[in-house]
Amino acid sequence: MARTGIARCAVDEVAVIGAGSAALRNARTRRFIESDSLTPSRSFFFAGSEGNVARWLVRLDGERADLEEFPLRFPDGEIYAVEKDGGVYLTGPEFERLAGAEQVREHARGAAEEMSAVISLVWPPFRKPSIGNVQREDDQGGVSGWVFVETTGVRAKASIGIVVIRKDGTQETVSAENQRPTDAQRLLAAARATPHLRTALVLWAFPDRAWWLLYRVVEDIETHLNERQLATSVSEAGYCSENERERFRRSANSAEASGLGARHAAGRSEPPKNPMDLQQAVVFVKGLLEQALRDGRS
Image (cartoon, rainbow, N blue to C red; front, side, top):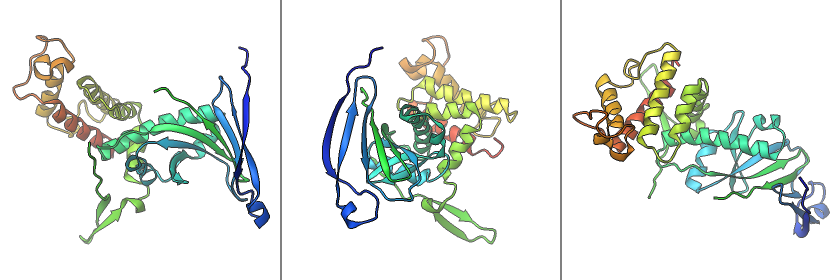
C-alpha cells in the first residue's frame, strides 16, 4: 500500500531539558507533530531530568471519580495505575515486553477491562473509562506521544476500609490506601487463575446486564467449580440456596417472568411462583461472582 505524505509542523514551547543549569531550564525547544493517514499522530518533546526509568504510559479518559479508583486499587504489579500531571495512566513492566505503541494500547485496553470489572464489583456506580493516548518515557526524560482517534445519575462514594479482627478480639480499620495487595488486586488475581472466572468477570463489566448475560456469568462460575472439582453448582458450593438458584434460572428462562429479555420464547419455560425481577437478579449474580472470587479453595 502506498504511504501518503506526512505533514509536519513545529510549535515553539518552553521545556525543561535536563536539570543541569538555569540556562537550560529556561531554554526554548520545538515540538514536532507528525501525522499521516496510516499511523496515529505522534509528537516528540523533552521535559525531564536524568535518572528516569523508561516506561510506557497509557492514559485513561473518564470522570475523576472513576479514574481515581485505579491508582487506589491497583497501585503496583505487572500493570498498575499512576497519577501524572493531573491524569491517570496504566503502566508497568508487562508493557515492556510488547512491540510498539499500538500493541501497548491494545494490551492496556484488556487490562482496563479486567480492572474495571473488579472495580464495578466492589463499587457498583463505577463507569468504565476509555483508553486514551500512549506515551513513551525514556531514561533521559524524553517523551514520545501517540494520539489515537476513536469513533465513537447521581453517584456517591463512601470511604473504603477493611475491619481487621485480631486474635485478642481488638478491631482495627485499615484504609484502602494501606492495603497490599489491595482487595481489588486479590479479586483480579483470583479471576486470572481460571479462564471461566475471568470470562465471568469480564462479562460482569458489560454496562447492559441483560438476563442472558447474567445467566452466562452463573454458567461460567459453575463450569469453574466443576473443573476444579469443588462443586457441581453454586448452591452446592454454598454460595446460595438451591431454591434461590432455581428461582433465578427459571426467571431467566421464562418469557412470562422476564419478558422480552428472557432466554426462551413464551410458553417454553414455566415461570417460578415468585419470579426475580432483573434488578434482583443483578444483585443475586453479583453476590455469586464475588463469593466465587473470594473462595479460598479456588
